[in-house]
Structures are given as structure tokens and as C-alpha cells.
Length: 262
Image (cartoon, rainbow, N blue to C red; front, top):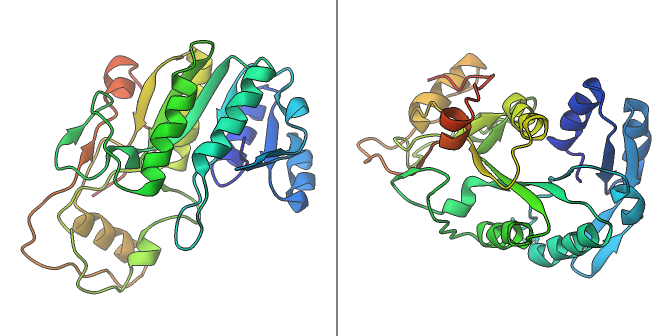
């Protein structure tokens, strides 16, 4: 559900391993692209009032549903994300899907200076974080579903990196805070690992285990790309959460594919 920046290459990766993949999009123009890739395409839009499109056909015959639909709550764009997810949950129950992976975000932990693991209670401060917690629980609290939650950190990969937004900016704060990032390749590998190893009814953080300071990391990334490095205020105290993917790396022995270097 959601063939965007993460969902589309994820679908392709599953296809390469012999899976049959249903993929949804809200763009009619994208249907031929999905079909040409071998994905069974469906034009489906979740809204606060229900679901537009043939959700029955989309959900029919599938063994696992991966929900990759982030909230749209930035700027002037406001929505009742929880209502959208509840509509999807009702359809999942109606059409007999039993295994769900819900792609969430580490924003649900809010602002803290501690080391965060999967055992850390949620304390969101943003509206998107608050609605994500409710959306997670919609699936997690259903005893008839085997639901696994994956909370990804900041996403980086092809055509997506915070350094392009930060390059050349002055007097930035929080330069000594740790970064909590994950590359697209690891997002895909983690989601496929969950399916292939049947890691159901679990909660995973998905963040690369190296956490350089924002100043060190983004300065290096800007220089590597020939961009003007961002400038951070001096003598700021280090703060901010450090997110550990403890269950993935310690218990499941997952090894990250793409490094986040200093």
C-alpha cells in the first residue's frame, strides 16, 4: 500500500525474488509504470471518509500487507490520518488479511536526550507523531492480526538527503546532536527480512547504528558533494535522542547494508 519513494523499489525487490506484488498508487498516470515493472497496479486513495478504488481486489489473495502511507501534516496540509488508517484497517479485517507490516517513524519517541530502544515508551510532540502512534495501535491492538511495526529514522538514498536542504545555511542550532538515519537499501532489506523470517507481532527501530554529530556528518556530506557546508553555532551542548535498533541487531542479528559515515 503506497508505491512511492520507498514502496516502489521495495515492490521491485520482492518481484526479483519471485513474489507476486500488488501495488497501490493515488496517481492514475503511474499505473502503466507499475504494470510495466510487473506489479499488479491498483488506483487507491485513502481518505478520512473512506477508500476510493477497488480495495477488495487489491487485498484479495495476498499473504502480507505492507502499509507505507505516511501522514500528510506538514505546512498547510492537514488531515485526519488516523481516520484514513482506520478505514484501511476495517477493509483488512473485512477481506481476511492476517499479516501486516506498518511502516512508522521514530518521531513517535518525541524529543529526549536518552538512548532510545524499542522498549522506550512513545512520547510524540508533533501532530504527525501523535497520529502515527494511534495508527500503529489500530493494527497492533487487533488480536486477529499479526502486526509488526517498523519505525524508521530519517530516510536517505537516491535523490533524497537532508544535506541538500542544509547546504550553505548559517547559524544552525543543534550541531552536536546525533543523527538517526537509514538508507533506502536497508529499509528494503529490513522489510524483506521480516517477511522472509516471519518476524510477526514485533516492534523494530530501523536506524543505522553509527550516530555522528549533525555538524560532523552534514559538513562531510556537503564537502563530498561539492556543496557549501552548513555552519552551526559553536559551543552548543550535545542533546537529542540516540536511537538504537537493538532488537534488529542484537536479537535478530541483522547487519546493515549501507553505512552512515562520519
